[in-house]
Amino acid sequence: MTVTTDLRMRPAPRLPRLRGVNLTGLLLPALLLALWQTATSLEWVPPVFLPSPAATAEASWTMLTRQNLHLDFLASISIVAQAFVYGSVAAVALGVAAGLSKRVEQFFGPTFDTIRHIPGIAWLPLIVLWLGIGAPAKVVVIAKSVFFPVFLNTLEGIRNAEKRHIELAEVLTLTRWQLIRRVLVPSAIPSIMVSLRYSAGLAWALVVVAEGLSGLEGIGFLIFRAQGLLLTDQLVVCMVIIGAVGFAIDRGMYLLQRHILRWKQGFEG
Amino acid sequence: MSNRGTLDIRNVAKTYEVEGRQVNALSGVNLHVAPGEFISIVGPSGCGKSTLLRLIIGLDTGYQGDILLDGHRITGTSLDRGIVFQDHRLLPWLTLEQNVALALENSRLSGAERKSTVTDHIELVGLSGFESAWPHQLSGGMAQRAAIARGLVGRPGILLLDEPLGALDALTRLRLQEELVRIWKAEGVTMILVTHDVDEAIYLSDRVVVMNSTPGRIVDEIAVDLPRPRDRAGAEFSAIKRRVLSLMGEYAEAA
Image 1: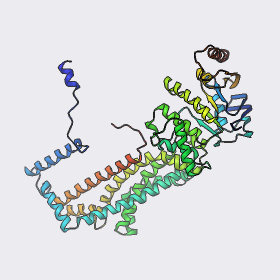
Image 2: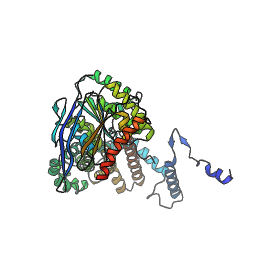
Image 3: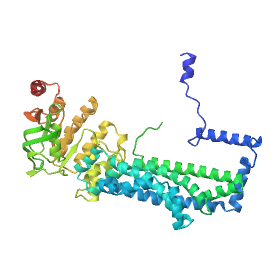
Image 4: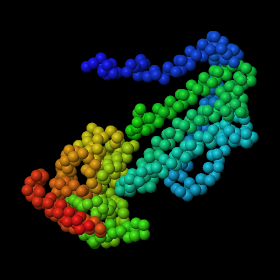
């Protein structure tokens, strides 16, 4: 065997693994952090517009110990959780109903397709007039934004059930209800899960916007207040939290999806 | 064995309308199947053999004539008839055990009886130990065995097999043919196998029904009076094979 083939045969060098966790994904964040540090130490940007990583960490400590950051955090999370649960439960229920019956679909279709195109944020001013600037208005608006992707994907998922599986249900003399529970809804689960993962991320992003537009608490409120007061370090703290929570939500949803769809064999990359 | 599983097909015809034209999928079909008999239906594609099976299982109830199972006209699907399709048709989101048990969803058995009969049938097809496997983890042959277990678990009088081994590799097919004979003997169930593998039909059945197309009809029935296990290379086997092939060939030429 020649030297060249020998080299080619050797497995590609791998990054160290930490208890089974691949560290490849941490490379870029480390690089960005280094760039941020460099930019602030060399004062490429004045500190008032870009605080150093250390100053940001310190600001987060101040916010947590003296300004009850965790209360704002909980306020935002609670809105997102409520909106996600209400929106997705209603969407799956109505999506299944519309998927099963053309008549239900035709009844809701035109109304939903119109409402769907008015962005949640455009609803906020009106709903705030009705419900005030507190959490309920935001829950309603975000639940609406969660609802549509899940509704449409549930409907589509039910409609994509395979004819041969429905035929099997007939051969096994399953009742309508058994057909729904054992065949139609499971067929729709993959597309429902995709939409749930998408809407969970969307809900978190929207709460920041909604809180920025109205209200006196929450991460979104803090970020706009920080801008007004030129507290750039606090602003960056909020951005980091938003990013980290968004990441955690998405990972959580991904793991949930993988667990629920463990019967499904797919392309693993 | 009991007298369950007597099938009487009397002068059955089935027409489809394709683009405004009437197509005779089946015409003048008569067949009597005795309890516990193993029948194979062979014929070129388009001869209506799968259509006939769909009528017997009850997925298609719009036909002329009578199909009687134990004296009752078939008007829809029922747990007294089981079927194994060419694709295993296991539901991917249920484990093997749950897939087999699905056939008992509407049976009158108690919970404990269900559990034990599911276990028995998984054992019958040689899949013990794979109860909690997902369908995608099974090989083609294993999935088809699971489908056979599902077809039999409700103890139907008759099991219909719609080219169940057609998608398998040659070696797995031979092995599953042996299994089918063993299962048939163990369960004493009437079996009707649709296949286009003439060897398979002769190897397995008491009688080979030869069909042909335009219109779909039965052209002949050939009894296979050979002791089991059969010798696929034996002289009598070859003679029967020649007869079946000539029946199919003769009509194919005429078409």
